[in-house]
Image 1 (cartoon, rainbow, N blue to C red):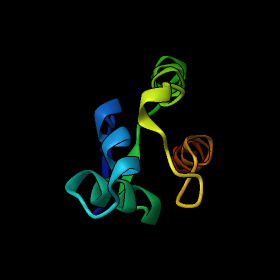
Image 2: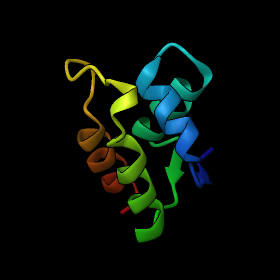
Image 3: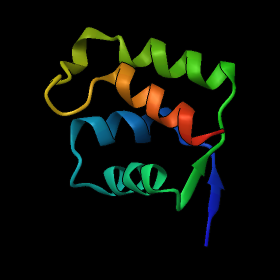
Length: 77
């Protein structure tokens, strides 16, 4: 079954900080097509603004925030 969902920014941040978590599982399901993220420019803008915050210190060898946004955006089409 396919689900459509708006992914809260906190889910995205939590997944990027820790893939082996419930939010990480949600993102994996989005990448495999089980969950189709519902996105618009306001949501993407919020994602971009929050993911740029220096306090998160994302490790680029996992997935960069920009790559994650590109991937999620491609799942939406």
